[in-house]
Length: 187
Image 1 (spheres, rainbow, N blue to C red):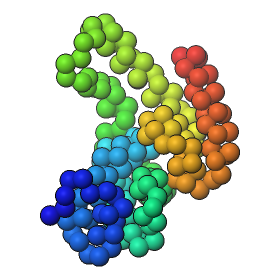
Image 2: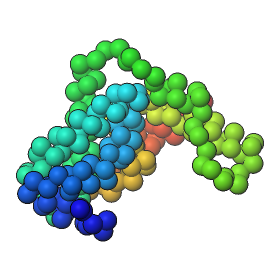
Image 3: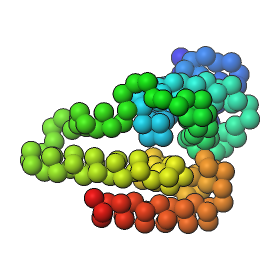
């Protein structure tokens, strides 16, 4: 049985040695972040589930190439990104509910929120406007904003995910934030 406080690097080493519990623990730890990133890239829940699952499997398949001194998330997010782009190239028409449909139903609020109904309504509308503006950005701008603002990756981690220099991350992020700001001011 894998102990709850086992570090990722130890789980990677155990997985390389064939320990199925360690493999399952890695998958459990990173399933949700992989799904959230895939959803932010695809805008489709069913596609995001497929992409996340394929990405976790690909991560395990390529674990021998992973440097266990580095964080897992940037490596995994690069796999998620590639799988999402592969899916986008293969698929022209979305088949399940879109991110628009999810947002139209409203984003559930945390239980026990102390905000007033009018404040929650304003926050919900702002989230809807931001996601709408994000969806209208070019893929590269949307992707870099999602990695920084929603996934909270450091510039160096984003550079690793995208396979670009850190300076490129900073300049793309600046342009993406400017474009998003302009879209939000227009709406």
